Image 1 (cartoon, rainbow, N blue to C red):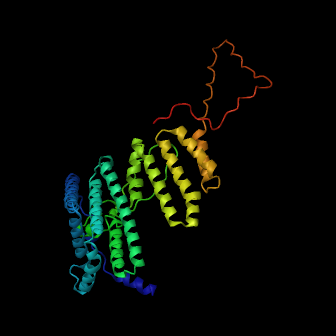
Image 2 (image 1 turned 30 degrees about the horizontal axis):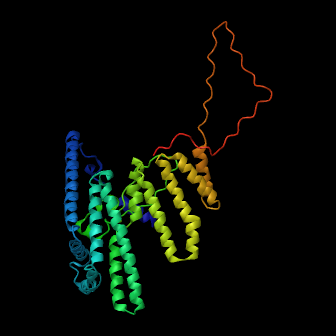
Image 3 (image 1 turned 120 degrees about the vertical axis):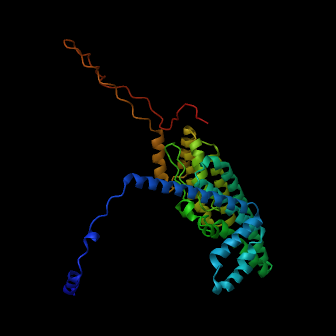
Length: 382
């Protein structure tokens, strides 16, 4: 078999000289100028696409009904348009999810999604996060309010089930499902983004989900590390966008975030009334959250307060899985810097005697005891 293949290759006609020789060189100056022009054309085109998309999206986000209508059109164009064999599916969608979009809850979800898409486009156009920060914070308040609305709707659905009102309960469940789906869909993966071809304009395709950032122990502020693309991810928006900005500016609202988060999680666990979950919260998750808070106390410049809170946390939770690393962090924070060694004596001039070296007594006096947890007396920076 190998011999036949070799014979076949050898029988092929030789390549022409033109095919084996390099092409003549292009004019480097003209080539660079052309590339520069293409780059500038690309930048202008991308900027125009982003600006046009931003204008269109923010106009649709002006009201709930307008946002829902825009969302419906996007679904139609991306999932059903031109597919005759899916006409039955289109009809089913209109009667189910499409009908849910007429509800106030789903309209508001569509409005919030489009507004966050607009902010994401603004971020992608190069607007500094600190310029947008207040709008972002106000957005998180609306997301928190939506969570409260959905919790009440959950309770309503349960009451309907108790009354055997199955049909109304099913309709409300569809409303809740569509509402949550809209807010939990990344701005780059939604029907609107696919319809307007926006994913490539948002960075990381607009689909990357935010991750929890580990708090730093060294008292230095973190630089912002990206963007949260899921509008309903309240935690992601804070950890990816808001908290890094607070750390850079040493904003005391850092601690307000942790206090709210601890309070909210405590209430959530209490409502479930599951003993195993309450133990996990009290023994593991809550102490971890308090530790993360102390790291931001340190970043705010309140070192003494942070160390005291860290020590109290370790003392109260000696069996916590992370206690060893916590102790190491406390030790690093309170260990004084290495004392500089005295400089070597200057060499003596020729013909002179070196100064005598003092001899320590045979029994040196005991050094005064040092409290390892003595804090720096310097007032903490507020």
